[in-house]
Image (cartoon, helix red, strand yellow):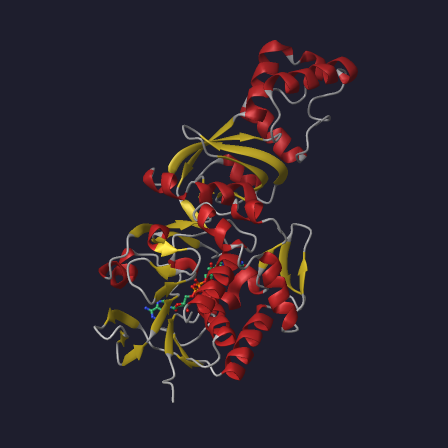
Length: 408
Ligand SMILES: Cc1cc2nc3c(=O)[nH]c(=O)nc-3n(C[C@H](O)[C@H](O)[C@H](O)COP(=O)(O)OP(=O)(O)OC[C@H]3O[C@@H](n4cnc5c(N)ncnc54)[C@H](O)[C@@H]3O)c2cc1C
């Protein structure tokens, strides 16, 4: 009789469960054990998307999809050919978990509850005979001369033919040391997806103000992003800021989160075009007071704040603006400069940039190029996306591939 092969999945999160389920589907005869260090599996899935779980994103073109990943773009572009957003939707549909896309293309379970995703994973894991051990904190993996692996938790020792590592993003490098010891290059872990602090800046009094279309640059870098900007009581947030925090995760850490941003409140409006727009307004409606005629897509509170910032008397008429003030107004609207000092985690939602270097991973199988028989999936890899369901999509894709290929 053939010996039953044993696979250990280290980490009972999104990628770990998806890998275990893929493995059992593709290779039903192997024995699969998930080792989870905490007392609960799928803890991040539970709290994800404000308890609703933004499962994936309605972007069905792999090239386009990969562009949402500040780290891992090229790697994922190839990986998505095996399992992409369409595959995710299909996977859940086959398990009677309907999903729906919202106006911003973020995809959630129709139930609007992350528990639906957890129930689906746990039910299938049970049906397929996946064994889950909690409070099993893996400290070391060794490859034995026999070709098998020895896995040591604080209390127990396990043996496996193959291992899939899905321990998620590690905030500190020492969480990855046991993988480094096995020969893997580690890219320094850093936070991504945070909002910008502007202590004591008077704009914070305008908390809650949203400008739907802005463009924000980080001064003295090439970093620029577009999207809605939200003023908060501690600084600035909203999609445009989160995108910058993700794309700039490493540069901003090097600056110790002290830098300047330049806000174009009018998206990509250019100087000449804006000047022409204001001059035509002066010509047509010059009798109106500046305070009463806000021609831009922003609240009157923000409009008045900006006028005060450059000391333009709000009670003058548009025709009294004068050349000097026109220049200052144009410059402020497209190049409004703010000092940033520090960062704040976005709704406790963060991901880790960095992790196991993709140089050491074969994208077709997720197998380590350093240790054969060892596979990786999820945020432990140097992969992270912006908000919108991209981080889970990366976990599903890499988990599915690792599960499929690990016994081939
Ligand atoms: C509050 C919040 C909300 C989020 N919302 C979304 C969202 O809506 N959509 C989206 O796409 N992304 C979201 N994310 C990001 C997403 O949750 C992660 O990218 C995703 O969970 C990564 O999956 P993973 O399996 O790689 O890691 P994790 O989900 O972190 O799972 C790793 C597991 O491994 C365990 N583990 C770690 N070390 C060991 C060890 N040594 N031994 C044994 N077990 C170990 C951990 O306890 C954990 O259970 C959110 C993140 C947060 C923090």
